[in-house]
Image (tube, rainbow, N blue to C red):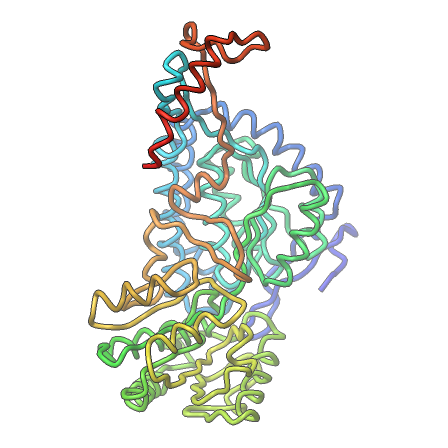
Length: 496
C-alpha cells in the first residue's frame, strides 16, 4: 500500500503476516531514483572490478563475517516479514552464508585467465580465455526466501566482479536493507545497493541501463521482465515457479519418503519453489505411504512457539490454495487429510489430496501452499511421464533403495535439479548449479556455472611467429592452397 511518508516522500508500509501489525515504512523509489542508483553503481563497478579476485574475496568475506555476527538479528527480521518460524529463518541465514563463502573463495579458480590449446596447425598462436564482469547487475528478488534466494545471484555476481542494485519484494524490504547496512560497514563504495519499492520500481530497474537482470518470481512475471529486457537486449537469468514431483518406488524406505514429503510439502507453509507439490507412488505401497504422510502431517504444530510453519506471507495466496483444493475435489479427487476447511485466513492446515485427476489445477498449476497430491501409478515409467507432463521443470525427487533405479529415474525427469532419497538436498551444496527448464526458467545460479552466469567470456589469440601456411591473406599462394587440399582428408577424412 502506497502511503505518504513524513516530508511528503512516497513510501509504503510492511506488515507482519502473523498479526497484521505494521513493521516499518520504506521509500517507494521511482525511476529517477533507480536510475541514480544504477549510475552510482556504474562508477563503483569499475572500482570493484579493479580490486581483482583477491581484493573482492577479502571484502566479501568481511561482509560474510558481519552478517554472521548479526545472524540472530537478521533471522528475526526475516521471520517477522515472512511469518516463518525463527528457526527456519536462522537456517536460511546459515545456508546462504555457505554460498557466499564458496563464491568468494572460488571465483578466481573458475573465472581466472586460463591457457587454451590452439592446435597443431595453429602452433604460432597463443590462446587464452578470460571472464569479465558484465558491469551492473540488477537483481529482483522474491519474498518466500528473502535472503537465500536473491543472494544466490548477488553472491556470485559480486564475486565475478559486478556491482549490484537489488530490488527486493515489497513484502520483505527489511531483509535487504539489513544486509545493505552490513555491506556499508565493510565497504564505503556503492557496489551493493538496495532499491525498495513495488512492481514499478522493478520495472524501472530493468529500464535503467543495467547490464544483466537476475529475476526470481512467477513464470508470468518472468515473461513480462523478459519482454522489457528484450527492448535493449539485456541478458536475463530467470528462476521461476515449480510444480515439483516426487516419485516413490515400491522398494523405497517409506518412512524416509514420508518424512521428506511432509518436509517438502508443508515446510515454509508450502511456499517453496522446489517444494513437493505432487507425489507419484507405485500402487502396491500407495495406501501405506498416504497413511504415513497423514500421520506426520497431523503431528505438525501450527500455533505458538512450537509452530513448524507460519501463515501465508502473501495475503492473496489462501484464495489460490482454496481454489486448487476445491477444483481437485470437484473433479473427483479425495481429501485424505483436510480440505477447504483447512484454509483459515492466512493460516492453512496441511492438506493431502489423493486420486486427483491430472487435468486439475492442483496438478497443473503451482499451488504454493501446504498441500500435496498423492496419486498411484502402475509403473515408474508412468510416474516419469506424469511428472514431466506439466509446463514446469524446476526440481524433482525419487525414492528407491536401488541405486540403478534412482539414476534411471533421475536421468529421465525433465528438471533442473533432481534429488535421490531426499528433498532439497542440493540447497546446501555450493558446487551444484541451480535453475530450471521449460516454464521454470533458464540460466543458472550457484557453483561454477553460477559464477560464469555473471561474467562474459573473452577469447584472446596472440600470434607469436610466422604461420606454417600463410592463409590469412588475400594473396594466398597456390602452393599453400594445394597443401590445404591435401591436409583436409588427412586431418578429417577418417571420421573418428
